[in-house]
Structure formats: C-alpha cells, structure tokens
Length: 163
Image 1: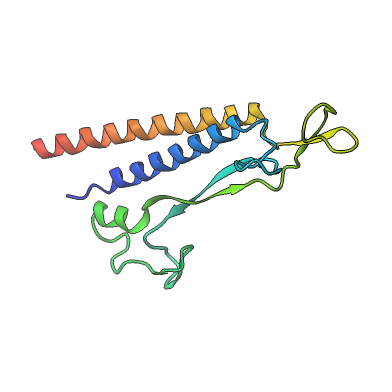
Image 2 (image 1 turned 180 degrees about the vertical axis):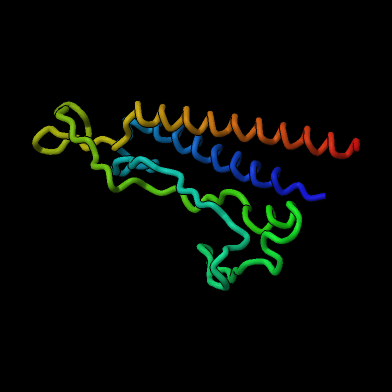
C-alpha cells in the first residue's frame, strides 16, 4: 500500500508552516532599522518561495527544476491508479526564503529617530501589515485544508484495510 497522498499533504503542511513563520518574522520586524548586531541596516520583507515537485513529466528525458533527469514512466497512464498518481505528483518544495527587493523601503520623516539622515528621514522596512495578515490567513487556510486532506486520506486508508 502506498501512502503517497499523505506525503504530498505533509510537504504542503511544512511549506505553509514556513510561510507562517516568515510572515510572523515580517510583522515582528515592521519597525526594525538595525541589524541584530546593532549596525545600521533596514529589515527587508521576506517571502517563502515554493515550487511544485513532480516525479515525472510527459515530455521525455529532460532535467527538471532541480537538475534531476526525469521522463515519463514506462506505463504512464496505462497502469492502475496508484502507478499514475506516483508518476505525476510529489508535493511542495521550499526553494528559499527570499528578501523582497521589488518593494521599496518606506521613507518616513522622523528627525528624532536615532537612524534619521541629515534631512530627518528614516528608511523603514518594506513590510505592509495588512498584506502580511492576508498572507497569514491564506497560509492558515491552506494549512487547515491539508490537515483535512490528511484526515480524509487516513479515513480512506482505514476503510480500505477493513475490506
């Protein structure tokens, strides 16, 4: 018996946990203008970057996204359901947690701030709390959906073992 569906959902749970941790870090650093060692350095928003992982593709032997040789299985879509599911999907891979350089830093006028420049402006992190909360809710809902999928898969496996 193959528990591939559980592996796929488990990888998605892990990915969404990383995303929630990243969002929490962004919210915690919404006002950070120094590096952890105390040197000047504005915190940049971070994003978790995911990729779908596939065991095989339909277009022959080529390098996949991760540099591995892949190709269609010998009996692609000719065997049973289990062989076809194993041939197609594998889950989610966390590629990296990358800093967001596409969104500019916020420039705020605050001459009393210790990191203000000669004109009284301070570069603040490019974190938008509203966007972060939307990302957190999205990750939370995806996490819940995968937990539900795991429970349903577990129930189906249990029912199949009773037959």
